[in-house]
Length: 101
Image (tube, rainbow, N blue to C red; front, side):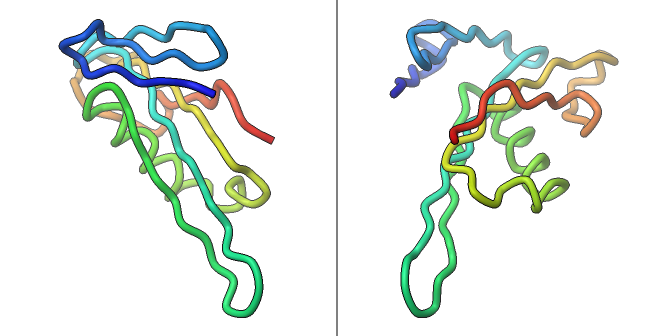
């Protein structure tokens, strides 16, 4: 499905043969992967990964602000671009670029 590389190896991740490049402190991507428990008790687990810390923050912030959007999803990819150049992740700067299913 995809691969992620450590920032020292090229500052990008590959998903469906598309390279997504990050620029530290300006542009990053975060991946949210969810696994649902079947049967009694239910529940789910979520894993978050990114190229730099900004993508991690963006993915976590998006999850907290959009909990209803998590239902039925296995993978969500968000993009963050620092529109106001303050080196901080703001909710208005986060865009979902891919979801599965």
